[in-house]
Image (tube, rainbow, N blue to C red; front, side, top):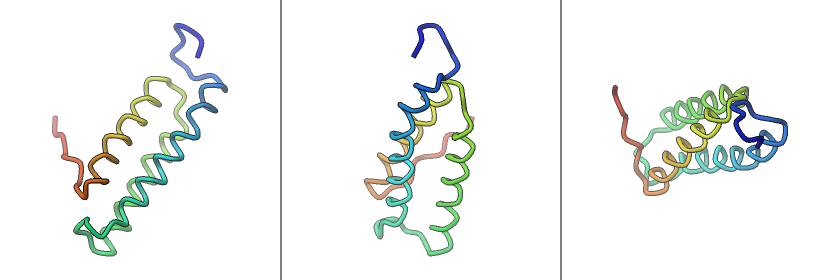
Length: 91
């Protein structure tokens, strides 16, 4: 990453690609956990929300927004691995 730039270069995008794909796959797998109290339809709906979040994030070119996407995914994954849903923050 070039110092002082806020837009991602091709190298930045390539470097983050593997991490983002890994988080995406881990979240989708975690939603299949039997410890989560979800019906089949609810699981499909949650997976659709995750796909749309990452789909929108895939077009992102801001370093800060890419970092925020990774942070949010890691935060959500930490709860899903415990068999819980992340709390909703209403502001």
